[in-house]
Amino acid sequence: MTILVIAEHNNSKIKASTLNTVAAAKNIGGEIHILVAGANCGEVATQASNIDGISTVLKADAPHLEHHLAENLSALIVKNADKYSHILAPGSTFGKNVMPRVAALLDVQQVSDVIEVINESTFKHPVYGGQAIATVESTDGKKVLTVRTTGFDAVPVDGGSASIEDIITTSAFGLSSFVSIEESKSERPELGSAKIVISGGRGVGSKEDFKIIEDLADKLGGAVGASRAAVDAGYVPNDYQVGQTGKVVAPNLYMAIGISGAIQHLAGMKDSKVIVAINKDEEAPIFQVADYGLVADLFDAVPELIKKL
Amino acid sequence: MKILVPVKRAIDYKVKVHVKSDESGVELTNVKMSMNPFDEIAIEEATKLKESGQATEIIAVSIGSDKAQETIRTAMAIGADRGILVKTDAPTDLGGVEPLAVAKTLKALIEKETPDLVIMGKQSIDDDSNQTGQMLAALLGWPQATFASEVKIESGKAVVTREIDGGLETISVNTPAIITTDLRLNEPRYASLPNIMKAKKKPLDVITPEELGVDFSPRLKVLKVSEPAKRQAGIIVDSVDALIDKLKNEAKVIG
Image 1: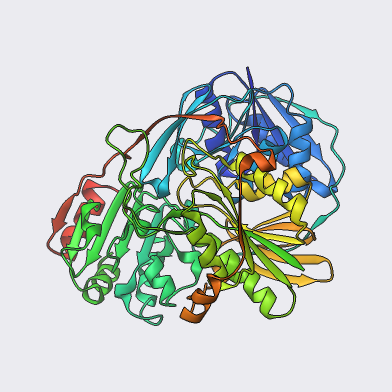
Image 2: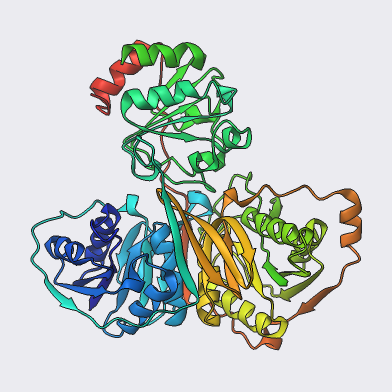
């Protein structure tokens, strides 16, 4: 049994999500190969060869693979799929974009967002925004999986010494092309992978007042999140939204401030290690999931926190 | 330009989900059902393209029980011109019609209807798969533009801004293409009463999977559906000082 992991990277550095995905592959068991597809991605291939537990790095280096367009990358993966029992990618927007295309071309029903490996064909994954966990057995010959990165501890970035093998690339699909990328230029960490997330809800009351949430996040070096209610009210842009229809986060510390705790929101943050809730309504459902609750007016508590931290 | 918009009847996003006590699935009896929120965004986007003169016809398609006709009528009240229901009594959330089967069904319909564009939700909020659009694009050999937050149509191409982790990516795809919607794309309108009344008179065809030659047999066996590990409620602290003390000395999450 040999497993193929699709590496997520930016052509210069391998992303941490790849390490969580290798960890999931280790739980399945068997030899693990990793595909590094990109343009001028030799450095990434070297990094991949050092990852603990990898035996072979497949390197595909071609201009049309630079931006990981799903059409080009899926064709490459499918062409090299024959000898693999399992193909895994991170459940990030990178993996979510390309893997279903791979699965369909192989006539396989993918399992999305695996959080636990039971055995080589049985996996647990969250459904209904994490309000239920489904245990499913794949009856397909090959398994195509995306991995919820918060479900697996990253493997070490070193300790391995895999061989690097150049593979023949497939040609460009030709009907899609990359135009531009605008990376979030925030000084703050990325919401999806931040160790600390400070979120505000409708209780914050206005766009102007949302600044105190940002100030607290900056004080703690955390990312800023928001509930859907705060987004719908226009306090912050949509990409701040934590929840079933927004981002799913699992930081070490999640502070929910002025957030009542709608199911929709809980689905996006309930796997956080420590949850703090600050709300003046002591009946707010958020207190039922919080490790530490403070019943207080956020406009008193948050400035005091900022001062005393 | 003809646009096809798949729409799914799913649990309403505000509903608290209850797992069945025998762990066979999720309780859906007497539970409020609505159009999957991402599909509402898809039908809104198609409607905008029609209002701006870029689209000529919008076809809403659903797969599900007779009740999914209501979902198609909702799409019509927003802007779809006609509807097609592929009728099945199989579950559409878990252990029934899976994304690969949905993609094969849509492919068969698209070969008949020959739309220039398919706009659909990036995922449905029941099985949360986020697969069908990408699978459909693969099966058709079409390009895909997933997780769209902005769509511009210009001479045979769609220029789409995509929400990716850590930023926004813009790609250009030749049409026909599949676009899947993310939350930021638009804010779906509320259907007006006159439009709801008009929707009742729009044509809606009901067909069977057999007529399309597709097989709904699932590939995944759902062994069980369980409650997630419950979080225990913690403690209420009485002051900011007590909170800081707990975070520093008990939870050790801040320095």
